[in-house]
Image 1 (cartoon, protein in one colour):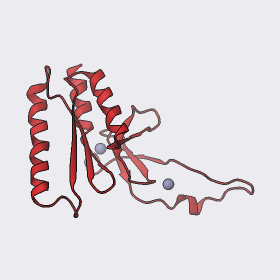
Image 2 (tube, protein in one colour):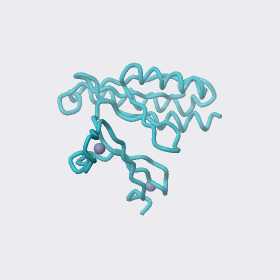
Image 3 (cartoon, protein in one colour):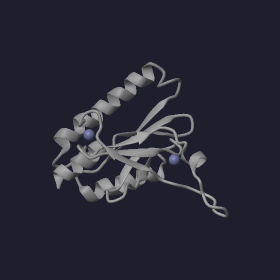
Image 4 (cartoon, protein in one colour):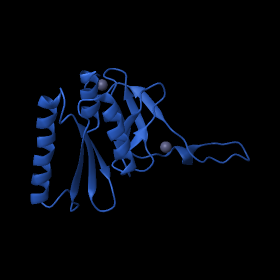
Length: 156
Ligand SMILES: [Zn+2]
Ligand SMILES: [Zn+2]
C-alpha cells in the first residue's frame, strides 16, 4: 500500500499552466509511514521554489508549487489529486486500458506516446490530423485522440 502511494506521489510531480503563474501540482507523503521519503521530497520542491523565486521564475513567469500531503495513504492521495484537478494544476489523461494519469493543464490539443518497455506516457506536440482527414460527405469532426505505441529512447 505504501509503495503504491509513493509511486503515485512520484507520478504526480507534474507542472501545469495557470493564467500568469506556472502552477506545479505535487502530492507527497509528508506524514505517515512514508514520511522519511516524503519530507525530503517536499523540501526539495520548496528549495526549487526558493531558487526559482530568486531567479524570477521560468521564462518570466512565477512558479507556484501546490504541495499536498497524502499522509502515506492511497485514498488520501486520490483525494489530493482530485483537488489538484479542481485547482487546475493538473488534468486527467485517459489512455485506453491504462490507469488514469495526470499531466500539465493548459497544453492544448496533443497526442500521446505510450512506451511498451517502461509503461511511461509522453506528450507529443502538435497535430496535423484533422487537416488530413478525408471524411465522407455530411460528416464533421469535432474531436479525436491518438495514442502511439512503441519504445522510448530509454527502452529502444
Ligand atoms: Zn520506455
Ligand atoms: Zn490531434
